[in-house]
Amino acid sequence: MNVICTTTEDQLQDAFSIRKAVFVEEQKVPIELEIDEFEDQSTHFVLYDGLTPVGAGRFRILDQVGKVERICILSSHRGNGSGKLIMQSIEKFAMKQNLQTLKLNAQTYAIPFYEKLGYKVVSDEFLDAGIPHKAMVKTIVKSKAVI
Image (cartoon, rainbow, N blue to C red; front, side, top):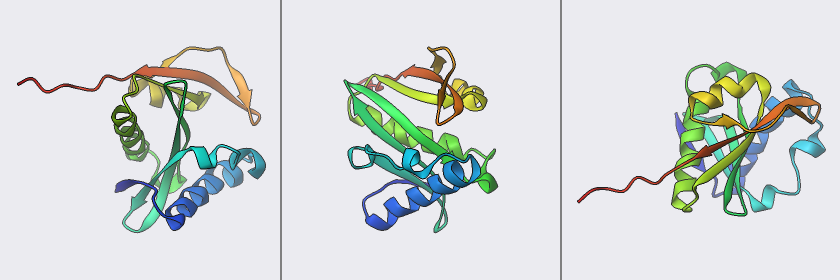
């Protein structure tokens, strides 16, 4: 499995197809809420199993905070580390942007997954697209080699 940061329209469409399958078809989020006005301002990631897209996520920077968004994995590939692969790629990308804080809004069922990756809940529960969420944050530190 391989995570890429999209550079072509085909790769971007792969990200959108995964998001539509998971959020729109599976979770019944309206398409106009899922594909939004922030797409052009975001960096998009796609997880491929061979040549087949199986996961996606996007990333934005808001006031020197990295915003991790739209993390999703096809049901056929959940539970095998796929989500962790996407998150690790996004975090590496964030470190290259010299960011120290990442934020995400986690669906409540996914909070244990994000906690294992070092995220902490920082809000009460709220609804986003009718789905319960909580805000989470993580401090990341770029490691410095000792010479």
